[in-house]
Image (cartoon, helix red, strand yellow):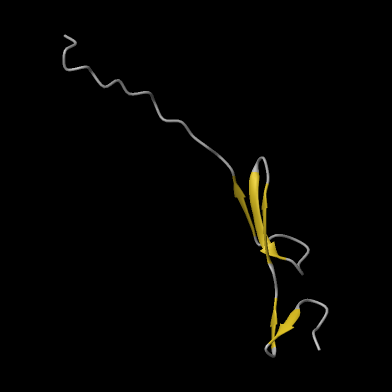
Length: 58
């Protein structure tokens, strides 16, 4: 029989991983826990623009 926090598979208790992609962060944790194990910020940066000169441009 399985406990309240997970399922029983082959005699071992297993838990499900939960990935929650949000607008500001990615939260990762186990389904049976109240809070996520990790909260990763979803930050995207843009580097400075670079100009590649045309060989015919002088």
